[in-house]
Image 1 (cartoon, rainbow, N blue to C red):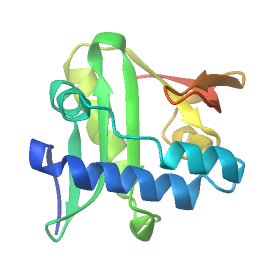
Image 2: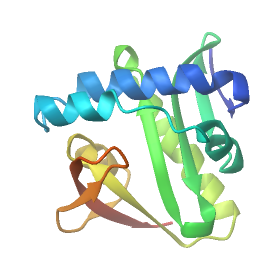
Image 3: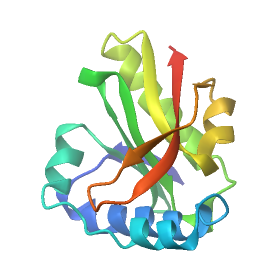
Amino acid sequence: MTLIRKADKCDVSRIWEIRTQAILKTCVSHYSNEVVFSWANSPMPDDFDEILLSLGAIVLEEHEYIVGFGFVDTKNSSLESIFVDPRFTGRGFGKKIANNLIHKAKKSGLYNLRLSSSLNAIKFYESMGFVAGEKTSWKHPSGFELACIPMTKVI
């Protein structure tokens, strides 16, 4: 059975594990090994749990096991993150998370959402109705640069 619920503090280590595994397995096709290694092995921010909880992060469980998560910053009209455990990709879990976050954004009064997509996730976000902008880069707090695509969606 699939369940989407609010994340809580005890979910943080599993959420970070999903993020790390997803980067290692799904980003390697679009980024250099050096970038993927740096990104995946960057330390979890000290306030990561506070960020997740303050932004109302959600987790998707399959048979009581967390397989994905995401969160949206409604104050900045920004979909911040969606990650699915690579062992569970291709089953529609990412779309379920995205749809839940888009619904949350609509309920909060937003009319559009923006995001910075990793290169490997562009097609996913396009399938969700996001429109890609020009390629740019983002400087990770650990110091490396990550190519990304700004995307927007009218909701």
